[in-house]
Length: 269
Image 1 (cartoon, helix red, strand yellow):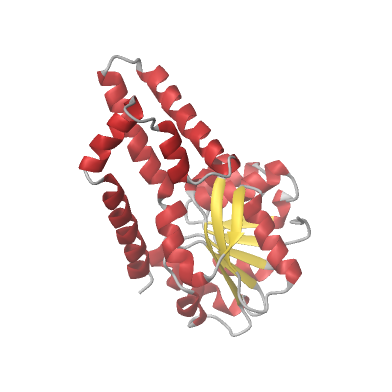
Image 2 (cartoon, helix red, strand yellow):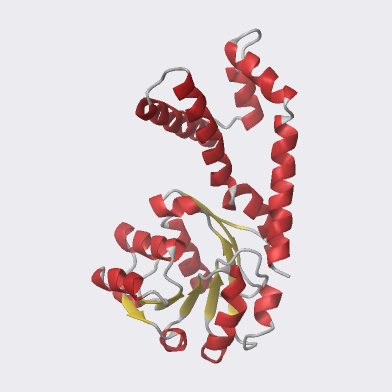
């Protein structure tokens, strides 16, 4: 998919934005000189400048020079940032990765000609293994849609979804890595308690998670089917599942995800 010949501005130079554009530059299809970053942190801009990206502390100036604008600030700062660049966005494509901030909320402060794309990526984009849900506006031209999709595809899996599902996506893939890290941390603590050296425990857990993920992606079986395949009757995994079931593991996961999605909706109000 093409990224060349598209001029981008990134309003914000945080982890997510830098990972997306650095990844696209490293994996091909993006010229760093076609991206201009803005941020209040001059040290961040200095690092990006050394990598060949353009930089400026002026959001409006960056937006004026771009065809596509990535909004990558904290959700609480999003609307104020948009008001500052609104006059520069007429006829351009705005791509927001701000959790919970709806298209309607952004539309209220932007010119009618702005095409707004909402995306929910996750932290593993920083290692090229992210998962991103992309909500395109109706009537988006094919070339622009392809360019936006290409940016996120360079850093992992990207799927088109309706905007109404993005709060649910936040609870699945947006916050999902955090759930797995918490589970891995609990496993690490018990592994060390049972005498496994910390580095060996960490690597065993990481490779187990990676292998399980690969099986889920490649086997064609559901997660439930794979879990049952591991848990032979009367075996060790079944014994572990009995403890998890007794502690309400499945219900806890569902309630946690429901609360996560609810919080995403709260952030958008």
